[in-house]
Image (cartoon, rainbow, N blue to C red; front, side):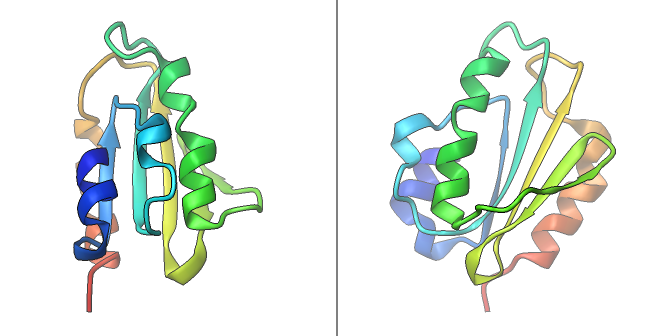
Length: 113
């Protein structure tokens, strides 16, 4: 998803990055809404490496204020009505199936006009 964001960001409104890291690859990508899921017990992509992307995503979205915590999620408001949701759980390297309903709502909320 991060490659798509960097190379075709103007065509999409939001992405969900699960158990991934974007790093410098996403630096300077246009602002879109991002749901980042981090499995704290991920043995494939370490949570620490995933977390290295958070400041880059915040910079891309112009986020400087603290987020609002809601359970296992922290929600930040970005520029141009973008949003960053950071969710973490004790899971490993897997998609957060328990959050599918919330993620679907996130995508419905963030669409291109």
